[in-house]
Image (cartoon, rainbow, N blue to C red; front, side):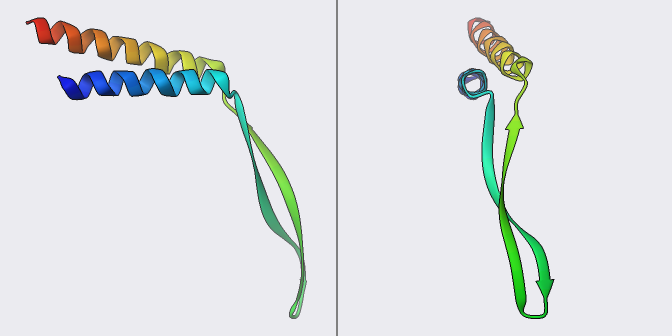
Length: 75
């Protein structure tokens, strides 16, 4: 039962983080040209958007997990 309560809290925290940071960016080094031993690379920035519904679903799942954990603790 304790594991389900911890899982519920983790899900709520993850959902809140996704709602707070709706996108993240990262940089990758891509090889543009290679001729023999010479290479040309370029850094490209990529942005990944996270839908807000994902955060709300995680929060809802966390609330349900906590409610189930507390309910099963009573019985």
